[in-house]
Amino acid sequence: MNKPDTTIRAAGQAQATSATAGRIGVLIVNLGTPDATDPASVRRYLREFLSDVRVIEDQGPVWKFVLNAIILPRRPRQKGLDYEKIWNRERNESPLKTITRSQAAKLRAVIEATDPTIVVDWAMRYGNPSLANRIEAMAKAGCERLLLLPLYPQYAAATSATVCDAAFAALARLRDQPALRVVPPYYDDPVYIDALAVSIESELKRLPFKPELILASFHGIPKSYADEGDPYPAHCEATARLLRARLGMDESQFTMTYQSRFGRAEWLQPYTDKTVEALAQRGVKSLAVVTPGFAADCLETLEEIAVENAEIFKEYGGENFALIPCLNDSDQGMAVIGHLVRRELQGWL
Image (cartoon, rainbow, N blue to C red):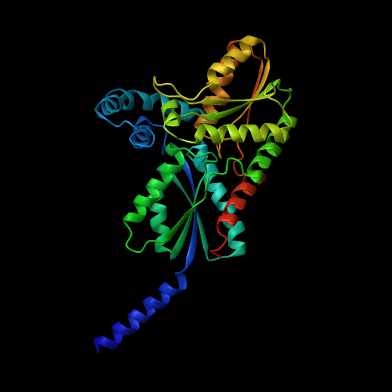
């Protein structure tokens, strides 16, 4: 009597599995954010972030001492205050999380209209929702193929590569692994460059002043990483060059810098804060800053640029300062994301 019941149950499970099997997952990924602004939440986030060998390559005893004895006991409180300045009170989360969720929702609406069997989701490399959690959920949903989109236009080992590291680690825990495809860096993609230019031109028209100069600020990395072969600075320079040409500007009107340096080591130069200071001292009164390396506004744009660097500019004699928003989930931003996803899904659909 048991054998027929077992056969029927197995057939039912096979039918349910076949109904969801063969699906394609599209997962967009950004850097990450603390779950809250309190020191404990920020400490958890910083511990995960700064313990990544891609971010801090020398994870030896000296660094472990600095991290655990100096940084983690002291820095979370100040960083929490910085997050407080930009926190989305309505959702009780960082703007990066709000924007990335919206990017995924808008992409899902477009993709599902084309093929409802495609699963679209989002994740953070550090913090929540974790990359491992979302990959496992997609596998359980029957996704046999997974397209991973790291939202970093310019490749760096500390950003793009570490997303792949985490994805591979998550796949290593799965017995039935989906096939994986990763969207390559898109620093020189014409759709991306055009979207940036259209966004900048639109935002400039809304400003109550005319900037004497546009500063393109990219996140920095230690110079030693670039010396050892990281292509990141070449990618940033290519983006700046193409964007400058698309806007019809020269280097006196549009220049680039690197922000967010950390520690005592030399990072890629010129530094954003030092350049902002020098421009103000030189007599520049009106400045606009764009951050082409960020797909969504976050602490580094909304606080570091719009607050800290604005204060530096005005302290040294500047008068008008504006941060041009990232592409975010705007029409231009979604055009870039949709373009990349459709291009990379070719051959799978």
